[in-house]
Image 1 (cartoon, rainbow, N blue to C red):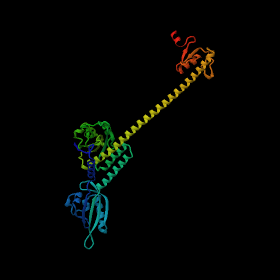
Image 2 (tube, rainbow, N blue to C red):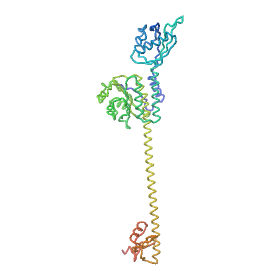
Image 3 (spheres, one colour):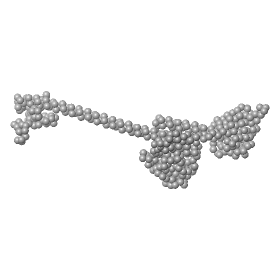
Image 4 (cartoon, one colour):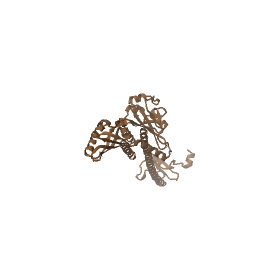
Length: 427
């Protein structure tokens, strides 16, 4: 297991961070390989070549005199012979773009080739010069930048986080020459657990098993990287103590190595982890670590944007709830006010009836019929006398008296013989 410092800490000098990012890009893009070789005779035997050519095909000067098929077994050598034959016979230069070549190391590379005829003093073509420029890293860089640009465009148009992370994982799995399985885990708000984010090529049982794992020292590659806030490189899962609790799970999933890089926010807080798994034990190259850092930074942008949008949506929801509650309170207040106004109008109307009844009482102290029936009148017997604190009084039936007592402020039942305080004292 190896821990390697990666992302810049919170508050780091932007110039230092930019320099680190540029270093990562240089590591990813590498140095182009320019080769030179000269072939002679109708068999196109190698006459001379530079060190870069021998580094590509292997065995150095021992290959002098070899034919293209001997130098590059397979389709690449046969295709080269076809072009050399044409240039030798016609004397016309030829070019080839992004020609796949299997190097002496067994790796496949892409080359741009230029074939130039060699002539003697009489102008007769005696051989062909080959100049080649390896374009593998150039094409890789172009694909990398195109993929990253597409991811940034997704982030800018606020594509769902799961869609962005899944696309990023698949992009890396396409870019890396060796088979790699990518996983992105997202940190809980408290930073103590990691949740499944994206892992398109890992088995579902594996993703379910690690969903929610704690962050901490020795908790696999990802839990440890999240705890340390620095990359953790496990080159052999079968022997590394960090995987003691997960070794059987990793064996079921067919994992041999796991490299994890923490995804950090601009303030240094944990957002998640970015992991690259391999089927067999493997030590990472500088380009592997640079690729992990580049995409960990891209994932950080996507996750932070997602958090910002989620916080904004939550704030808008709370504001909408508050607006709805305020509107409901205003509707209730308006309803209560309308009801109060109706009660006040009813009270005023009853008070007017009482005054009318009191005036009528002056002529007929105990009328025969209820005086509280309003304009429509009431034919019920006048059984109860009521009065208010302003001196108004009236006779009414029990139903209208009860209504008056409920709706008219300060109304009380008055006796016919005794009234006021004297009636109270002699009750």
